[in-house]
Image (tube, rainbow, N blue to C red; front, side, top):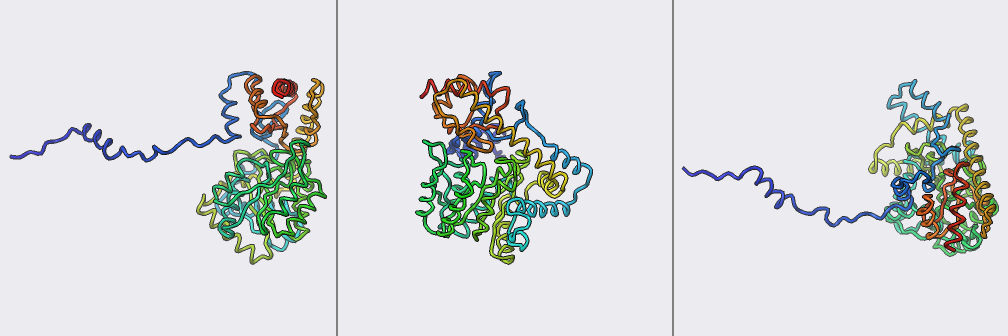
Length: 424
């Protein structure tokens, strides 16, 4: 009787792995370039020095360099713990989040809010809001261009490039004066093709900390309107520039007064100390309520395909703080404390550098506002500071002032002073 020869199982699977499972699906995949900001934290974590300081990522720290959970956030957490939130209540909180968010930037009594002209959707912080808008821009205006300030937050380029939107830059920073290059900025606005999109930082510009004056904002608004450009604001630091929410939103209000339709990407990560919760809002101002409803439906469709619904916990925290008058006042007072501490550290860093006899004019440290100081340090100087002093800042010289404390500011000043003497 004929018998089929049996192949041992181990030999069979070994052969199958080589012949069937051995196709190199991912052999062509190369490591992605390191993120210029996140890689700083990786280098910091790998450093074993007890003197190391991380001034790369912009997350608020207290006077001892420790992460802070705001009292307003703790109170909102207690409220959540004491109540049961059904799916319906979570949906209600989403509506509250959008409603309170747009009031924050446009003003609670503005026509945009009271007449229902705003389309709004909860987003995954400002990054997610920008990504949603980039996709919306690509779908509605596939041949359009997004102009980004030079420099800007590095991830802005990734966001619009991944959405396959053409990206160009407009001049913003003057490396000689270490201030705003206003004539060049206006020139680039005038020379851009009509109906281009322009991304603007309404306050606490990242990374430079340089904001236009009120008069300069009015001129920017005028020239954008003359060319029918669309202004899109990345609002990640409202309140952390001056300590005043209204003051930090004045640029947006100027644009609304001038008759612009606008877009806003908001984040509560930095201003409420909720970096891990990724709570944000995307809003687009339209001509009327019907138009806003149509836009909102498109945004929801885009979000549905990307991630369906964002997490609820952080959203409920933010909506609770914004809608409860007592918690809102507490949060605003805490934000002023944060802003004032950062301002003090700016003054202290400049004072220590001047005390060391530095040959460089450091006025720009205190002229700038917000969480970041655009130091003017070269990449060689940044590398020198990291290697010798174990102080980590981004390669463009951006220092997170939130991480500077009374305990490390002298050490930081010494590191900067030596680096600028050795690597001129």
